[in-house]
Image (cartoon, rainbow, N blue to C red):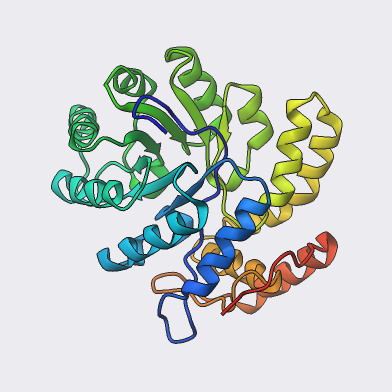
Length: 305
């Protein structure tokens, strides 16, 4: 992936598997990456919200990127999240991720101290000049409390090295449509929010989606049906998946939901999460049991030690 290119298609955000003791589980991580590639994804992302990127040390980030790149090989598109609370920390994360093999950087604006509109524009410009990787703007005001308006995204789309935006500002289909109209065709617009509005986002100009990672095989079929005009089949399959998508967005417990599905599918060994993520409460666990009983997801992989 060159600096002028942007990722497109199905690009799941990898969960970060931990052991019962809370350490990185590298065999499970490699198993997870193999599962994603076998499902036909177009790229992978690490250190996003669904990765518990907020709970990873700098050393762990280095290890994770090295392991993922080793499994997928040198030519596979790999996106790394950057979530620094200042420009300097974001640049440090960006340079480290690029050095470890990331092609694209999915960058949140600083959020602990809220920047103004011009500071947001200046921030992304500085990160874009700091590395050779291409930059994806992560427009996620629900997480950051920092809005990025359409005009600001259009301004940033003209900056060298900024090639895409992940729209997570609800209602995402409306924001996707507005951004698509404001930017040129070379600038990629992708959806997030666990693919909650996938069909509408694609209708309005999205060229990719970045959901959590426990059901890429199901999303692959939906996207393939959309691509060949089999809309009724895509809508039916998406409708069946929606309850799991919704549960995978439950505040505080989304990470535990993702990992429990992966564990039950035989892809990772343990569903442990790190604070401040929460374990499944009994009501959420019961809802997940019911959903998985209906879906009957196949066990596609087994963890290799």
